[in-house]
Length: 91
Image (cartoon, rainbow, N blue to C red; front, side, top):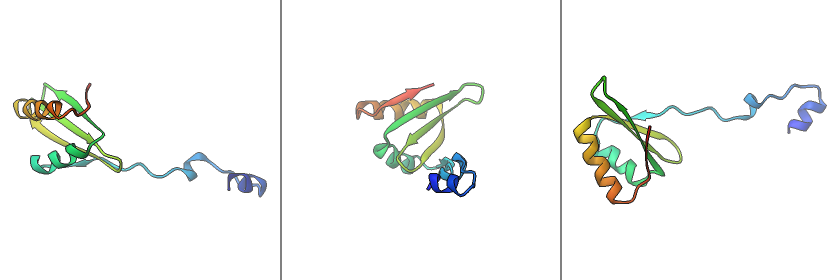
């Protein structure tokens, strides 16, 4: 398709051929986020000490699901996920 567009004199750009990026979805209930976390490829953790919260991110194949929790609650959930053998990346 790209070769045909170039042959016809049309300029083909990468932007035209890429799918749009999907925005992360924020979840507000811990029970729902845990379901996503069980199926996630990896869990990412971003600590925000100035706000006193931890942002947990569950990466699935289609979306990134996030939730903001107090530090104590997030640490408890992360401990459970580590016991289950989930890949957890902190940055």
